[in-house]
Length: 396
Ligand SMILES: Nc1nc2c(ncn2[C@@H]2O[C@H](COP(=O)(O)OP(=O)(O)O)[C@@H](O)[C@H]2O)c(=O)[nH]1
Ligand SMILES: [Mg+2]
Image (cartoon, rainbow, N blue to C red):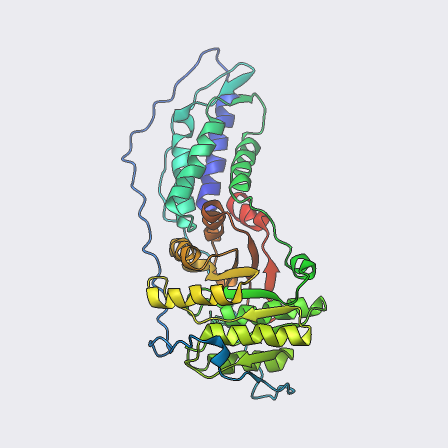
């Protein structure tokens, strides 16, 4: 994804090398005149509009008194039939994206024949501009990209490079170090957290927009925790979207998980309340609360989410977002954080995202851990997020 930047970096390096180690060295300082070219303004891509919910848009009737909630139904565990088996769609092949940034000339480079050269602002101006454009192209949010560029400038300007020193590795290590600092958040060991909780069950609420992958991620995470010997129960608190309960039940049949459900239109908080009670009486380790996808701009539905949080007091609120949503994802997550609180992220469909810059701005702006990334549609397709993966994408 950062191919052009990489090319520019090596071009920059080559120029520097030539200046530091010229074939016919002369004892004088030459200043290469900057080539004056109009600097293009970055064109930010319009955020991808959110998928419209396919379900009925009315807000489900709230059940205010939890004690009066409908009696829980616990889905019977059955062996999955062929018809019930989850449909696994083909994972689309990753489409490499072409960068469109065009900055063809680098700033002036000073020729120094002594033991070392000092990097001046004008030397790195275009390189930084190129970096910024590439970051924007990779879906890094604008102010984050600017911060990265600013930080890098501070580190590079005034830096002395010794004759013979590998400039490429100097630049790479500075970029790596800036990005690593930006992506640093407190880690969260979910399994450890679950086991450390004295009063079972550990409650996890999944929130995020429609179609982001909440229900699928619940199934994947359950599969992962089951492999560690933990027992999981689900709350079918998406009482809004058509067929959402059936979708959850299909996964439940595959994974042999109990589901607490009410009927469509019921209060999602009441369902979750019942699910927690059911888990308590059965010694279940984890309750995962599914929730209906909603636009962060729909204040009624956002308040409903707030109610689920107040009623269930989750130990962890995981925001599920599509990795390729780009800059809009940051905005959405910030709104969810304001209304319901977000403790961590799982980014889905990273298999469809050739960029990964979203992770950089999320970590930089919200300072909350990205626990896992979804890399496909099968149960094992949930991998621990590794910042090294993003760094490799950026600087190779
Ligand atoms: N390729 C890919 N597809 C995914 C991933 N996670 C979820 N999906 C698909 O995204 C679609 C919507 O997922 P769903 O769990 O129903 O989203 P929800 O509305 O947030 O509950 C389904 O077709 C999933 O199979 C992922 O990591 N990679
Ligand atoms: Mg769902």
